[in-house]
Length: 498
Image (cartoon, rainbow, N blue to C red):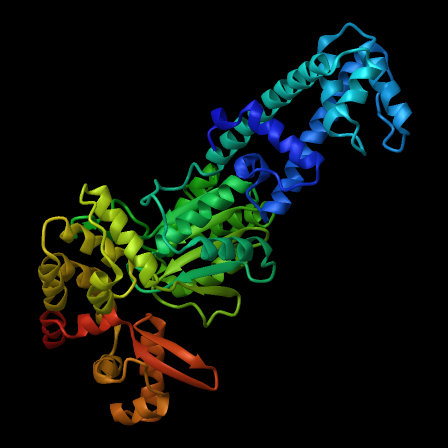
């Protein structure tokens, strides 16, 4: 939060709430200083403890300079506490009086009325409150300085992160919190894989988690390594990334450079890995590897990352699933709900000065075609900026203009990685019930042998082309609605013919 929004009035309201055992205002609970962890209650406790500790430390420092006893006896009687206050006010040090008034007003083991505090130092209540206000200002200055330093450290820890590509992630708060918790508490599962279709928001989600953990300070630093070869810009054009990582060798070299292992630059990959192991098994880093599927030898990479992970944690984004590795924790990114999809499209229209708000009824046909993929929804919103809704829907169904590029971006590479059996099974699933079918039914539909069917289904699951619902004892398999749209386009049919 901006430091200039931390005011004396806000701090005073917070101190009053703490004193009266009430829930404090939320204004100060988002401070970087509080590490952004835990519930509002936990952050409130940490804030109270920090404010109290700072007050006691400043009071002790000033008492020491005046030759007074340092510590207030927490078990002292009411009369003894008032005697301590009187001793502070018998000195002519205004800072000592301000910190003492603040402590005895808000931080004593039991509440002392302002009237009694003022009488004990021969002041009227208004005069004593002025000293309290001065103490609040002193504490405010300490709080602002500490928050500035916490924000500086957060920026330093996040120096390797790419720029934010989003203003807000709709429907992602719970998922960000869950991933951040799993990354910081999963002692025996050091790798987290964020998985799903292209365009579902894996990179944006990883970026938000990285920012959250950088600000909290759980790790010495947060390192981002991208293997993304291309992305879709807001006009729907596939843009090639500059200098992405292509291999295990590339990734290890970039990681060594980001971690300051300059002596490793000219060494073979095996020796770089040994230097990385020595560092990462002693110190806790968070390392994000974006777009794992673009790494040519990714099968060799995952075991190496496992070896490197001591206190260090790795977060990976991938279209291909890593469930087969027992030491990888998988988070499958769900599509947006219709409510969040509506909010996203409305925000994108507003950003383009087209503030028309789509009703759920108007959005329903779009949602039926593409589902809740954020990238697809953003591209649709871009079209709605200059085309009527009926034209946009027609373009979606026929893979024209921007959606054609969308399908290319999301599906073409994956389609090319499938074998004939997997492609055939995917096409066979085009006409099944939207609620899905069980494995026995699909196998009969495909005409494949048991072994070929199981391999083909595993391949489709591996690339998130097929989704699984239902119970573990009776799973049902179905296609994502955007996959259905893709399979019905002339674009896919041309690829299949080629």
